[in-house]
Length: 143
Image (cartoon, rainbow, N blue to C red; front, side, top):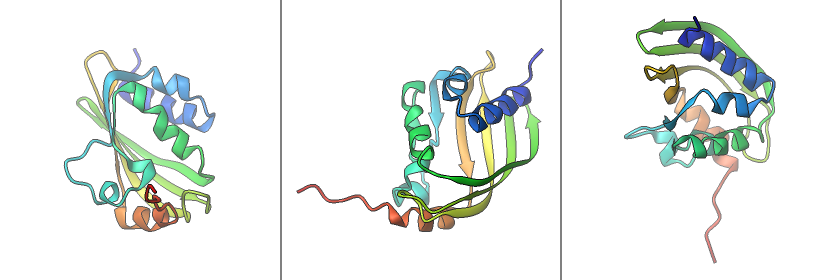
């Protein structure tokens, strides 16, 4: 029987291969992606940490992240308990059109429903680093 940890490991493998449709199949229709009540990175318009509600909106995350070049994306450990899986990662990205580049250690928290579908995903990261990396991305006022 496939565990939630197995599902998360497969999601990271699919991410590494650019297989976004396979990742989306693991999400509940009403998934909450980066849903926070108060998050400083979201208040500063960090495009890859924008909240997205519902499976149909999550591809926008992958479109943004697809503009980044990952130098390192290393899963250091996975821990599970109840309906959640926490993943410790080390990441590094090169400068790009949307980011000045970033090196960070993060925790990704995946929450599952009874059917084994992801109902919530959050990055726990150094938001200051992400805000600084996104400072290249400045929304232009509408004229």
